[in-house]
Length: 192
Image 1 (cartoon, helix red, strand yellow):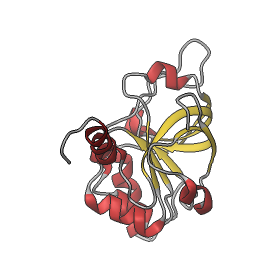
Image 2 (tube, helix red, strand yellow):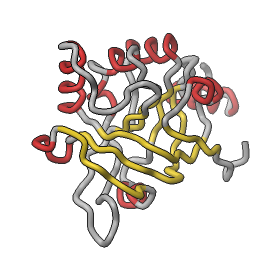
Image 3 (cartoon, helix red, strand yellow):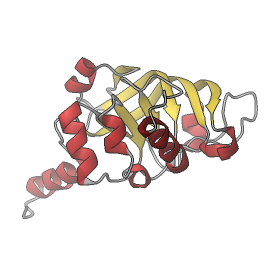
């Protein structure tokens, strides 16, 4: 793929689309995503373990790890940069096993998350850290769904168009954070 090419991807993310994506693919994600961070993940997992219904359809959902700032200047949302994904790792395998298909964040994931992704066909996307103001321009609508008392960590439904992301870990477990440096070393005569 040339440096400018991006694959259009629609959320919710079905199993077939997730299976076609590969680590390193650059995508433009459009559709519906949900915002959750640490406290929201904990609440959602507790709710599910107690037999409750999730406040959004979990099957094929994409969760964006973000705590957006309040909307300004006529936008649907304020700055919306990604949160460090490892903070959600204690809850993520449980959610993947119940249908979560995609996650958007930044940084590495632990082995339990990657194994759940491989088992269930989920994908991990990275958004560019530090670009929250630019990422917010891709958000057309933001709706509060639950847990308003969590402030920026409340559950929201976002309608997005052409959010630029990179597939970091694909549904086969290939990991750009590992494979990219290895490929560079091989190309430049380094040892692997």
